[in-house]
Image (cartoon, rainbow, N blue to C red; front, side, top):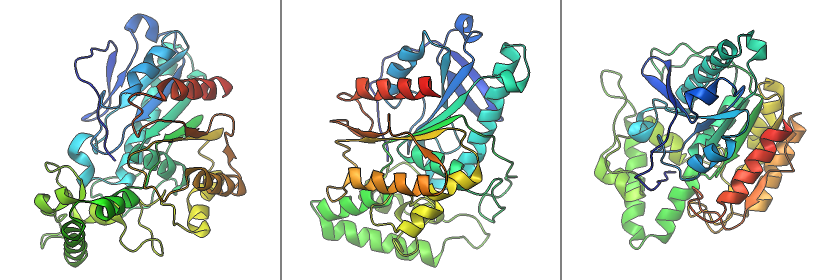
Length: 345
């Protein structure tokens, strides 16, 4: 889901073009950049871009005197691009950024890529879906008819991975329908959108069908963000829990079998070199009240470890009092957990 931050702040750093038309901002001065061998790549959620998540600048400040530099990455799906993109495209672009940073750090250190330091990817909200998709999906991804023009490459290994606020977009929308002031109207819009998306996912010339914005806005989605039928069905996953979509990774009603296919597949992919850190916000406004956060995370942990991967039990957990984007209470706790995770790698 989306998040926002207070405007008016300025940040010093270095802007990198890691792929054509794609950039990442490194929160460090050019003078200090050469001494920072390790990298933390931050991936935002739906509608996020540079400086839209409040705690990112706090995290950058905390890393200032360490050998870690923080990169905030822009993807094709950043800001209002999420509605016509996909997790497949996201992880392809994240992989390109990881490789770019490995080469960048190797050049700065005047050494081989093996001396380029550690790289950790941290996802916020739907960015957590990117992290899990990066870790559990086939490597490289199989070619599909969806992302025309993409040539999927082998994704680089990661030294660490963090998922923050891994809420279910599907359950967040279900909660909006359940607790809306006008639930019948919202439910009616949802049913119409599902029917339209399933009936005509493509136009006659094989392009993505774009759903009516006045209808998608009734579900709490941005009124100015084009949303394709394909991405809508992936985010809402109307056939879940029996047949979950690509985006439906974190819903509380998913089966153990589904968790085996996602969290449980991390170990066999061999992309993650260390432990997985998962940080759930204790007062996440996008998490429905029926979700037992602790129990859900325990199920994820069991699936992860059963598949041969490691779960970081020291730093993972529910951050008490924290909102979805941790814009107030919980920021210090979050930053402390991330710093401890990085230190222990």
